[in-house]
Image (cartoon, rainbow, N blue to C red; front, side, top):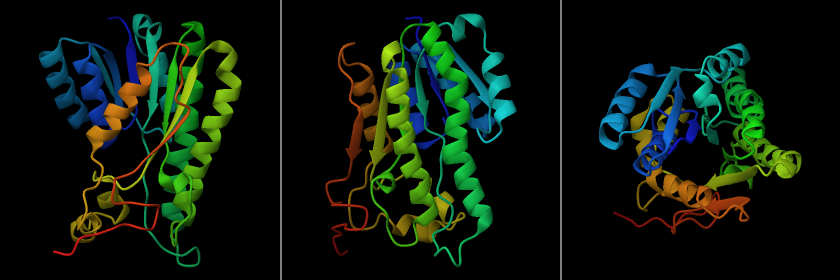
Amino acid sequence: MDSYVFITGASSGFGKACAEIFAKNGYNLVLSARRLDRLEKLRNELQSTYGVHVEIGELDVRDEIQVTNFVDALPIKVQNNIELLINNAGLAAGRDSLENGSTTDWNQMIDTNIKGLLFVSKAIIPLLKKNTRGHIFNISSIAGKEVYQNGNVYCATKHAVDALSKAMRIELVEHGIKVTNIAPGAAETEFSLVRFKGNSTIAHSIYDGFDALQAEDIAELIYFAATRPKHVTLNDITIMPTAQANSTILHKKEN
């Protein structure tokens, strides 16, 4: 198979799980993240296990010039065969009221979750058009559907992802390019560890008492959506752990 999947934030969590399931099914990969050492290890594992070709690169999606240079530097054969883009890079930072919020956290979330997605999409969309096929996956969140207490700016960024998915769909429909918005609920990845600045006690307590989604659950969903017939698009998917009713109501069992 000549097709390539371009994944941002591929060093862990949803991005890594997506790389694994697509490689397992014969897709070549372009993997980017800020932690190059993790990408190198992942590349070696995937190439030796599945025999696919994996391009990697250290990339901070917040830097427009870096994004443009990264995509432009890809071999022409790779550029000509990018079929899927998974805009996965994103994060939550802090959980405070607006009054007490950190503007540093706000800028990090806005620059990564919104501007980073825009920069990468702007660089990849012309390639998808040129290749006359393609599918874009934008990783949003249940926070892009609802707003919860002290979620303010993070929720706003994920609402923006939801809106941008709709805008992309309108702009790209005439080119036959699919756009799927994925909105996960509580998922046990490094997400909470990042949000709470490395405080593992708080981060792990978020998932106590219920079975959270795993990165593999999201990857399987994305792979399913990506392999539907050409005339079928899954536009918008909200996926939750069974114990979660909405962004704030979780049924937790007592230990």
